[in-house]
Image 1 (cartoon, helix red, strand yellow):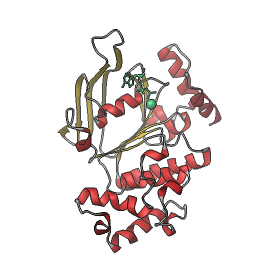
Image 2 (cartoon, protein in one colour):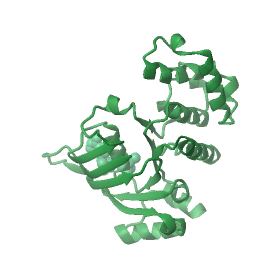
Image 3 (cartoon, protein in one colour):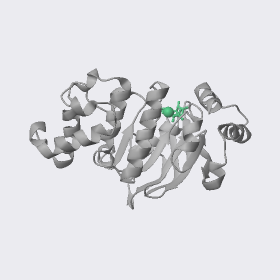
Length: 269
Ligand SMILES: Nc1ncnc2c1ncn2[C@@H]1O[C@H](COP(=O)(O)OP(=O)(O)O)[C@@H](O)[C@H]1O
Ligand SMILES: [Mg+2]
């Protein structure tokens, strides 16, 4: 589904502040595969997502999605096939629109049925309620409430539903639970796994939580200095504890994982 070959990105090339963001990243994901991504701050994780989503053009290499070369495709064109969530729950939904309107916006964009109230059919509302009830947050009875009034966790859960209401070919999750309290973060992580499995969505999830990095999905990718330095799957992955993984990180990089949140979450589980 996703085939990234020898991807390179140099920021401010040919200047004294030139900086290598990605240095020959190759990664293939099969359809429906769910991989987690870990690495210290500045390892190039978000840069990889930006490259895939088209936030900038890469300096070299290629990206293929579902057989199509998207390396030079514009960001808004890729967005039709790529869903993306960020750390900040405010980024995935419009605060001044209701839950119902935010959901309708997805259909409105996809079908080019404007304005919103035309896009919205009774059958859609029934469907929205059904999807929302799976969150177990009582949102199915609050379709008219403005999204800006929801809690961070509710809003991120809703953003996840909205990003997958029409299942994308690829879902990019950039520490999407990092700003939530641990209980809510756990809930959103479970929901993420459920939705990805239900719709067989190919997913990359950046997380600072080593426990989730080893538990969620079927593959763990470790990045450092713009490269993939470890790619774990199968038995090797299931046998690995968070402590083992931190040790591997030290062996590979000769450094401690500088992200203390990661150390804490690794030590806990
Ligand atoms: N637009 C940019 N211009 C210059 N440098 C950047 C840009 N985006 C990211 N970088 C640099 O690339 C490196 C990787 O950043 P990033 O991908 O955000 O790391 P992380 O793994 O924490 O998500 C960092 O050193 C960062 O400062
Ligand atoms: Mg990042």
